[in-house]
Length: 414
Image (tube, rainbow, N blue to C red; front, top):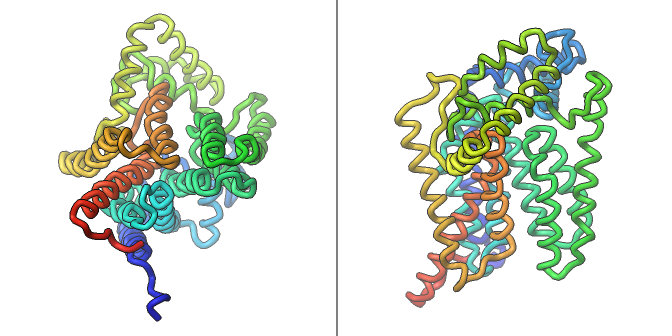
């Protein structure tokens, strides 16, 4: 019977994932069908129109491309059971539990001491101490489902080197992720490059898996692009809000952490008679013209937005949702993770980074550079903060293992 004993790391990870799932279920039930933000209302409305009229539209009879399709279609499927947003929040709870286990797998893959596996249970435990996940799980936002998909993509990337089958599955997950959170289009080039690099560093053919992953992802996205072209006679890969986001991030009133809370009313007033696509094109043109007319200011704003990516708070569109206590909790839960990840880099010469660590560092800090082209927002950072937890867990593991070595003891059995 001793040989059948479940290792400590596995038990701890499962318990942490279970507790996170239960906590998220409680949050979902308490929040119920409430919708507090404009995005939530739009997603719910589109799902209802899909269910009742077969239309991807916020308003019946008015097709839209302003929102990505993935999450509304998920909602539409859930609403077969009943048209209650709480069902999506329960799905978020399930996605959080899966994410927790995937982070543990990632930490195990990135461990320098495979026999210890300390990080594989610390990562799920750290998720319990990051309340932003639970808060977001109680909303009708796609970020939690996106986090699970993204964790799956990265896990396949670093744990299955050279396996074309993993490239196919990774491509499916990545394609779905783009349809749910279109900002991941910015990673359409970086993810395959990291995949090829991971294969090469692992001693496999670097050119075998990455193209398959990219091709499968593109295959999933293209049908929606065709739908958009047939409806609006314009090439819209996923959604038509790039112009709005670009202007929100590049205007005279934009600050490093303003997010969507920017006064662009003067621009919007000029678009009152425009179509949805005409408005987005106009706003994109205004943002580009602002950058051209103020290159120095735009460059300095970009630098501040990159720094703002690591901020613990944003100005909120719904002001009543902010509070000093919430800000303190966010700072207290986020900055220790960031400091642990940064501190690990100081040990990189003595303890070289693993393939998993390099991939996550590039993705996490690369996202700061990419997202600052538009604007940075904590909600958009959630899938990446999950990866930050892995880096923090691996830093803690390194500290624990080194301490155990110096004390002549052994770390917990994996």
